Image 1: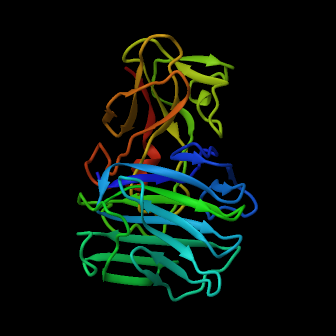
Image 2: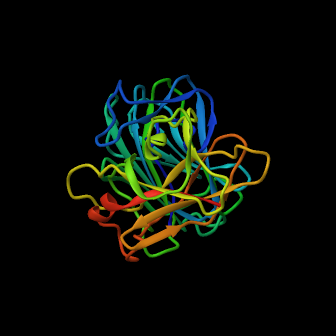
Length: 334
């Protein structure tokens, strides 16, 4: 697997992924999301962070981020080493409105950023050693144009040769973020520049081939409609104390058009409702194949669990639009 993070805040919940630091919310108006997205992450006060911790240390990353600047002139993306020190960060210079990548040195872009429009920002960061000034890579794309291209530069600003986490940062209230994705380079797919694209949520919209759990809370009349609200709520839910009890649901189609699907990632908001231990396996039905992911332990408070499928488990190949539209998603009690 080489996609290590995907988040579009399409649940309408700022806690969908990452560690909140300060007042964030999700919104879908003022501005409108970049189609076909429905929600984005909004900064509600000055000077706050949202941090994402990676599994393991990385020496090369590709990052895609959509950002809507209400005000210009400060940093917005930080990469940290395993000791929590800043390795590199992206900034907008207030006087020129040009992007900057700041590590051991400052690299400056070539196209001014504008306020009150969505920008697509991409970063390629690579480091080989912390002792050489000509071994690293920092490249930045702005709305598809390569504006910083340094492939022989000191890309580090910390003592450890890695990146272990990243933060979104907004000094100014009401800056917006969306369509975050991060690739490393370890595999054969999703291992390079990500490019333009959107994170889209496909909600349950009908019964699937498995209905073995029971409804709890307010009864909507069907298992699938216990799980289709935005943002997620525990006012209605499905449940079971029986190991192996499985529910899967049909989901809405992807937006009209021909799409290249990088990955499918089932997402569930789950909790353990009794004093015993419990776990859940996210489950995908594609064609003749039912794939249950490794069980994930439940907590006594609601948490998000997710499982990345970079290829279709029914074919082992890239997801087609037809396969995504026909799939079922759900959970299996473990």
